[in-house]
Amino acid sequence: MSNRNARYACRSRNLCLQASCVLSLILLLSLLSSGASKKHYLKAYRGTPYQDTRYHGGAQIIPGRVQCAYYDRGGEGIAYHDTDAKNNGSGALNPADGTYLNQFRMEEGVDISYTKFHDEIDNNPYNQVQVPENQIYVGWTAPGEWFNLTVRTKRAGVYTADLLYTSNRGGTISLDVNGEPATPPLTTPSTFNANDPLDWRQWHHWNLVPHFVQLRLPKGKSVLTVHILTEGNMNLAYFDFK
Image (cartoon, rainbow, N blue to C red; front, top):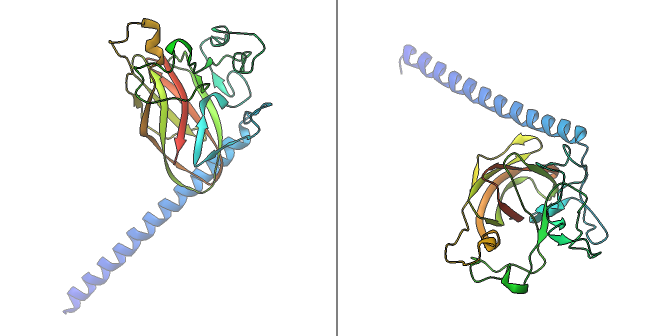
């Protein structure tokens, strides 16, 4: 090899090493920035994990099933945003009769109901999947609304989640992780079925979308924010993370 070619090869190797170092530094800074952003968000966040006389679990565990109705405590503007202060499910559609499900979080603005098997309401023949009876869910959703879910992840990594839901008109939602956007708009396929003779039951055609969302989550505590982007009229039961 001539001296000229040797010098060229040496410069090429040096440039490659420099480029590799720069990429490694960018990745390191990105990881450090992400960690700092997470710590800052969690330190400033004033919401707390949901618990009551029946549910004592606190932060919901991933991998596992994350129930939407167990959104955080903290109230409007902290743990959730709803377009009105009334719970249209608990204490309204479901009368305040002293029972746990009918009065579930009825003093809060997020609208909540549960699956019912009388009169073929939620066990109707137009479901695409079988749903459990008394499954609580967030309903009456509208664009611009959101709610927070505190979770605890056993191991850092990429997780996928199935979604149990209904969506009369179709629509889109998105998720944040610790205050940072984590997904593009995610489409909830419409569950409308023109064969159902009962108009009101269009809100009760249940479906399960496998691998609906994919999230990269750090180990330990995180806050997921579910945003209703378009259409609304969705009932969101749970995300099953695997």
